[in-house]
Every structure is written in structure tokens, then in C-alpha cells.
Image 1 (cartoon, rainbow, N blue to C red):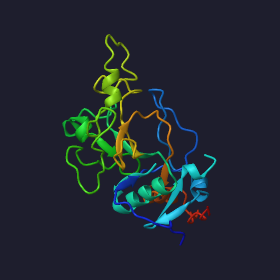
Image 2: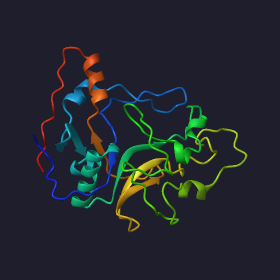
Image 3: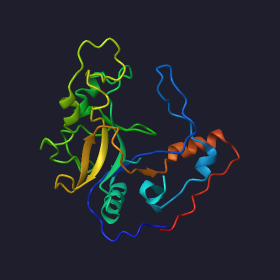
Length: 237
């Protein structure tokens, strides 16, 4: 078993986002890419940089090329590699439900910056309300505006567009998608706040961590009977 050499453990809980290799994306009626089914060939040839808690992990910065963070084990792994590899930030699969026409306007998600966060990928499990911290959430207490996260600083700063006839590119709050801080990123002491969660505009470039998804691997096996998907060969560093 190729385990990460956990020289030190930082007590922070992150849920690593899920990204399985997929083929060329299909395009929906609104012109935007749709999620694809798992690609069996790419599932069979995935890369592993380490194994923890029965799951393999891919670290993008260790290759010349998302993880959800709701478990303590996954979080300790992320905290360790962020510190040990001196990574400034890592994307997670955390996402705010700010889409138009997708049910994000339902009362159970309001206000969306408090109740609208979820882990995208298999299951789309919801995060606890951001105003109720617990042992599995690590939102920072500060940011650019020196306010607790998430604060949607960039989205509110850019503001709403007026006299818009085409709603494409706007959130359900009327804010600009490009600026809306709708993605969850892990920052490494960016505001002297340790390794912690921040909301961020989704176009920012950052390394990613991918964790094997049991649900998607099971689906790939169901849709490809008789084809074996073995554990990936660990890649030594």
C-alpha cells in the first residue's frame, strides 16, 4: 500500500473534490458543457500519487497536467500536502448554487451564501450552513475585506448589471458569474489564517486534487460489464 508519508498532521478537515477523466464534453441547449459519463479507458489508466483511507489521490502539481472535503482523513491529507509541497492554494469541489433555472432559488438554499454551498460531483452533498461552523468546516475568519468567509467580496464589489436583456452570465442574484465567488478554494495562510477555506471567483487558476469516486467507478463498471478497473499503479515521487 502506497501511503502518503504523513510527517506531520494539521487538524483541518477538507473534503476532496471528484474529477474523473472524461471525454470531449457534450454541449447542452444553453450552449454550455454538460457532465459526461465516466470514460472506462481513462478510468483504467488513472494515476495515483498516494493512497489514504482506501482512496487513491491525484495531485495535479506533481504532473506536467477536485476533491470534496467533508471527512477528517481527506482534510488532513490536503493540509499535509499543501504545507509539505509549499502549495499556495488548491481548488476543491465546493460550489455555491448560484445557477439560474436549476432550482437554486428554492427556499431551502436561501440565502445562498449561507445555505447554498455543496460538494459537486457524485452525490452533490450539501455543506452545513456557513454561519454554523463545525469540525468538518474550515472557513477562514478573514479575507480581503477582513470579513469571515464566505463573503463574496469580488462579486459584491463588481455589483449587478442594469438594463440586461439577456440573463446569460448572471447569477440568480443578478450578479456577474465571472466575478461571483462561487467556488471553494483552500488557501495556505494567505491572510495569516493558516490553511483554511475561502470563497473565490471560479476562473482563478490553481492546482487541484482528485480523489477516486466510488460512485463513478461503480457506474463505469455497470456500464461496461466484463471490463476490469484495477487500482492505479502508484507513481513514485
